Length: 340
Image (cartoon, one colour):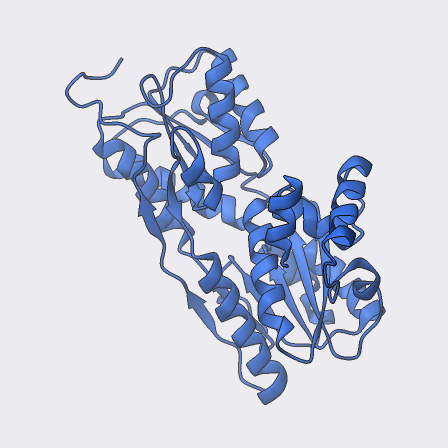
């Protein structure tokens, strides 16, 4: 049985199950008890459970997850665990809020756990410039491009965030939408959010469309709850739009819920597009249109690069994983009817 199986059995998200097994504090007691009970009943093999992860291992790999509620990272942790399971290494998984300094946290854990290598799921380049010199083991940043940073022990595997966001907005524009609201992250503390926002602006500029960030943009955390609240705020402010691009699927899903509660139909009244390609999106009604990242490719290349650096002294490298587009049921063509 894998963490995904346990998630399906309990009804909790993969990230929630992983945090419960890792004894992370950001899990309700109800969820923790249900997950641990299900693990015991299923004879779940806890080779990466909380007790083991809390030990100090001379052969450990640290995974620093920047974003407690980011389901993309929850899926990625599952893939990384599967990849490392066939090696002699043990994982130490640490979750933290997306507003905190992931590099300072990793430096602290290096002193405590002494890992042989580190995977950063998410990161901010400014934090690396400030604090990474204290870390001397091989590291890979996943989903963020670190190629501009001057550290020989730091690699990265990322998606073209500018291109992905530009593609999302241009897809909506191609369907006749001219007023498009954006739900994203904090562009100051998140490089991913900043780059995706830049991609949105490029699309508007390329098609000579005005965009008023005060009226049509909300920056929130990458979560269902924050996407929901951002959409409520956009509606309450009287923003007039026919489409919404959310910089993460979890935000898009929360936004759809808020639209439904406000009596808006998706996609008849408002088209909604996300970014990430979470499996959940294909099971929603309507199915969520999205720009998809390959979690499997991001995880496999990151682990391969880290192990090569740890075991063979391979130099740092920086790779970009292609994105795809899923034109599903949550968007529609309004060109024949014109804008509302």
